[in-house]
Length: 300
Image (cartoon, rainbow, N blue to C red; front, side, top):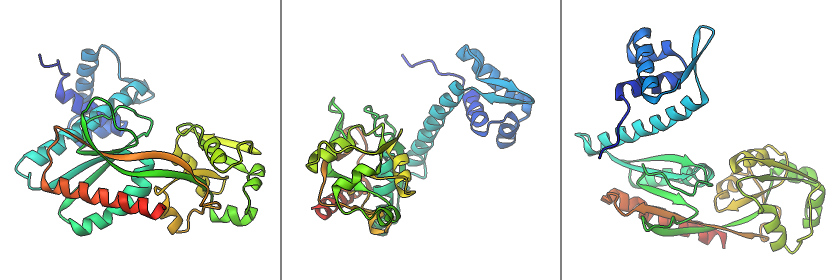
């Protein structure tokens, strides 16, 4: 039996109100009256059985619960719009929806997409990001780049490359510290991430210095935040390659000990077995596998 859905018009009004953080702004965007927006929000709150907004002075403010719900609804509407575009009269538009972890998307995939656009200028590659700690892949993509192959046999998978980890720092910090020996890291600040526990421990073990410890450690929640701290010169970090190769090539990062590396994860391209696989999709997959081979070769 089809699941019972909330009132769709009320969902649409709610998503705009939560996103714009204002009933008035939602009314302007949707060309409705303020009262009509309020009535639709009331309908949805009655259906859900709990409030979504609370009054703050003259404004109605979405609760944290409501903001989380709005993000889910926004993603669902995006998927519906994509499906309508792909299967409607404008189905000639070639779209590939790619899901990748935030750091990999920003530092490895997106910098290379220009090359794919030169080969296939009529293909629209749309990248959405997920946290690398999410073990369950939410659907709504044509291809995912992930560090693990989920169990259950839902995906075809192709290995792209294996990451290698090494110490990274800003050129300014390396010049300031004059670091040339691994032992000097003991007097430095080490930057690490909650999502990559044990990154320093694995590297000092691989470097033959298992007892080496930092003078000071700064820990951040996600690696892309840690990476920004490294770029800003707050300390030394452990970075994945070839993911950060473009940053080194551009001079934003340096590797003081490039030959001392620890083993990282293997990234895979994942395509759902039940997904459409048109020619432009297969072309993108072939291109992606070529980029993975090239990246792996550059790391050797």
